[in-house]
Structure formats: structure tokens, C-alpha cells
Image (cartoon, rainbow, N blue to C red; front, side, top):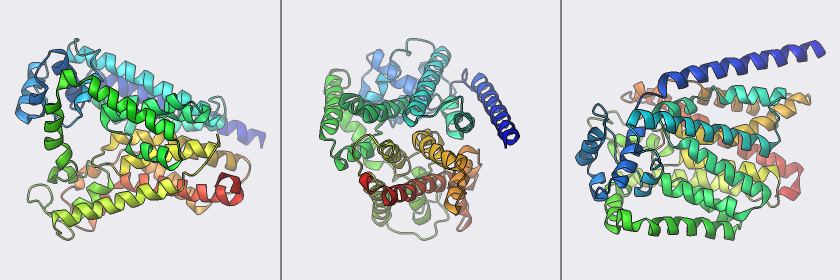
Length: 420
């Protein structure tokens, strides 16, 4: 037994080193490349810093004229972020794009590392233990983090915000719980489901502080953006978000994307629907399914005190916000890590205590592998039914992980009624 334990420990350490090498090579290769995604954030920030009339940002042609004039002539991007998204890269926009991307990437990796450290602390995971080493090896092979690195995305920062929020929940610090959600909402619009979690779990002060932070930031920046910019943003982005033919491309691994792909027709983007329904009916189906996912997760979030399940329930609503978003590409799924780390920690502890894995545990592991593995699902965008169903592996994996949380939570309530 001791010999087997030693072999396992060595194997886990080798796996961690291998994953870190892959991670380092990918960082070295992609960090100096300016790509779409980062181009949009950089352009937003530089337009704000340069005093450009922000109403122009939401005109596609004018926006990409700015992208090109700011030193990115070969890139085209979409102006679909909140006006306050410009605040994210404001400290870096005075630098040339390549330099700004490199520095922003280093800062982002710092946020990522800090997030993992906070999550390990919350869940009581030691990096020196076999469990900690095994989880770390998975984290550094998690495909969504690679897309964040390549595209200079903001989701490491959002992961940091939500990790701080979980630490606030763990330590019962109301401002630390609330403010990160408010910041996430103003930078990327992520946090609607966590706000609902505050209400469902009767954390009224946290809800008030988060909403107050959003209001203060929006009103405080009105002199720079202007109220008209927000009206234009609503008209050009919010009113159509998730309902355009391009929004149903298989790049977007969400419930909304799958529903629109199956039941909407467009000659250029969606030529092979299973059944063509009216846009209003498709939107209604999408809303109902998304609300069902959110409702199920929130229903399993009724915990008091500082139980580990409180943190897991918050992590679950953060993850639910990804699959129920109007649009979510693979890099969004880095926000599943708080839930995955917590659930995997519980499972591995049970295994180390000699408990045999059930079928649902194996399905959870399969979902983790699908989420971590690079899969060429985007090439199936024009496939017809039933092949098109294979084009949403990250969505299925995300839903499976949420389902595993729900089942494990029910078991916890059954054996520990005080948590109900």
C-alpha cells in the first residue's frame, strides 16, 4: 500500500510538471500576439482616455476604424461591451498594443494565480497533498484558461472577483462579498445570477451593497460616457443580444445558442435547423430553459452559516451564469473552476477514504475531461440534425457539472438535515 501511494504521488507530481510546461509554452507563444477580444478592450479604454465621443464606439465601422488607427490594422472586433468596460484596461491603454497585451497578460496571470490560491484556502486544499497536486494538474490543463491567455480576455479578473466574493461569504464579510459582484457587473455584465443568490439566501445587505456599487460606478462615469451612450448601447447591443443569427454559432456554448441553432433559420449562418419556429417562440423557449437551469441551482442554495456547501452553492450560481448567458465562448468557462475545484476536492477525499466511485462520479469525471480537452466543435456549425447535437460539448459538460452539484447537495441534505 505504501509503495502504491508513493507511485501515485510521483505520477501526480509528473502530471503537474507536464501541465505547467504546457501552460508555460502556451503563454510564451500567445501572450505577445494581439488578438480580437483584447483589441476590443484596448480600443474601449483608449477611446475613453482620448476623450473620443463614446457614442461612436457602437458604430461597427467607426469602431473598427479606431481599432486600426490604434495600431491594430489587421484586426476586426465587435463593439458589444458595456461602456464601463473601458475602465478595465484604462491603466494600460497609453502603451502600444503589443506592450499593453504583454503587461495585461502578466497582470491577468497574477489574478489567476491569486484566484487559485484563494479557492484552495477556502476549500482547505493543501498544494503539498496528492489531492492538491492532482487538482492543480487539472487546472493547468483546463482548456478555457488557454483561450483566456491567447485572447487577452478579462475572465481571469472576473474569476478573481468571484473568488474574493466566496472568501467574503466564507468569512461573513458583507462588503467583500458584495463589491466584487458589483465590479464584475460593471465591467462585463456578469453577476445577475449571483445577485439572485443574494436575494434567495436573504443576504439583503450584500445585495444592497452590490447594487449600490453598480449605481455609483455608472452615475460616476456619466460625465465621461454620457447618458446617450447607454441608450445607444441598449439599442445596438442589449436589445438584440443572443437573438442574431451569428449569436447561434457553435462558438457560443450556451442553452440560448443551442435552442436558436435548432429552431432558427438563416441562409448564411443557420441553414439546417431541426424545425423552424418564429423568433418570438424560439426566444421564449430559450428564456424558459435558462430560467429552469437557474431555478434548479438556486433551489439548492438554501444554506446558512459557513458550511462548505455555502461556498459551493455560490460557485454553482457563478457557473450557471455561464451556460445561461446569451453568449458565452469557451473562455467564459474558466468561471466553472470554483465549482469544479470544490466538487473534485470532495470526491477525491471520499476516494482516499476508500469509498468506491458511483456511476454519477464517473460521469462527473467525464464532464471534466470534456471541459479540459480541446475539441473542434466549431467546425460543426453547418451540420444538420442529429450531427449538430455534437457541436455543444462544453455546454453539455457544464450542465453535467451543475447536475452533479445538485445531486451531491441533495445527498448532503439527506445525511445532514441541518444544512437544509
